[in-house]
Image (tube, rainbow, N blue to C red; front, side, top):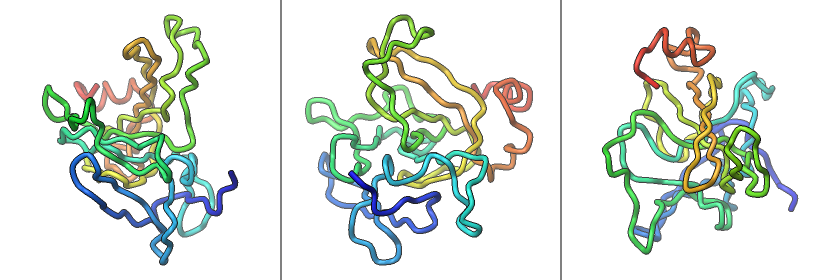
Length: 196
């Protein structure tokens, strides 16, 4: 399938809310009058593009699915046309975090995929979870679901979840006041102890 457009930042994206309950969806369209759905998974570039210069930056795009200090388990619907964001459900019941609010913005890197047929040598013989790579964005700002933010990658964690490899990228919004001081996981522990 050929993409008609590619979005390097959220500069021209508009979020629409449709439905309610298990039918609730957050869909993205072009701000300039577009009606065709824009996939936050496939149509947003992995590398952030400066909206003013239209040139790639050294940062990656982060698509927020779950804002920090919240409980609703939103996710990109990888099996729906346009890949809207929806609240995850199990047996018709909308899912939420049971142990309280999360303390970071959670989402994914666009145009990435954890291959369910690849066994990573550092993942105890497990394969990918068939989803985009997850991101834990540790900045101070609460990012809204569907927002696309430029981030600096600080590290990666490998988790095994229900027998599948589930990589977690630790990143910080490049506009966060802590971003200039954080370049890797060691800096996080030194500058912001207890964050991880």
